[in-house]
Image (cartoon, rainbow, N blue to C red; front, side, top):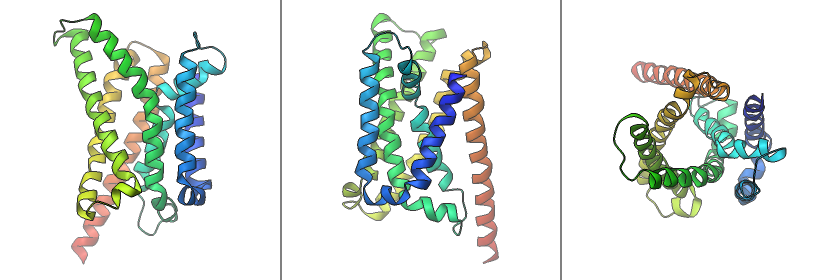
Length: 236
């Protein structure tokens, strides 16, 4: 029940920011960046308070599992599948960059926790072998490191002052790395969630179903848009 509520709340918050706070995102994006950093700071404080109960029992997994950050990234993804004349695209495209930066900042909670976890596991297993659990750990760690690097590159180059110093072609090429980023997120989620889901872990099953549906819907709409664009090009 908790995980389902977290998913619903994450999408509600991200949609509210994207659709209702559009003008504020354009005019004062630093307010939303500050709120994202504040949420991470509250999370870091929360995990230092001992057992996660009450509010912390809900909030800590909300941030730690990247639920809110992924909701922001999902909106960033879906903006690109709407037609050029779509009202949704026209409304959200101008704040796509801001939503992406918010997602990147919110990811810091996830990175902070699991970087520490990986270091502890690696420290306790100095002689890792590419088999069984150790192999999964190495693979997961490798993908995680690549994701963090891509997250940093995409987040930094999304900042206005960095973008202004870059050639338009170079900036576009770097932003195309977002496709690799989202693809690796799917792989990462699969490695982390599928094994416990197959073992009957309810939160993992919920996560697999929710994110599986999100990415499947995106893939269908993206393919549909590409087919439509190709047909329009052929007819021109």
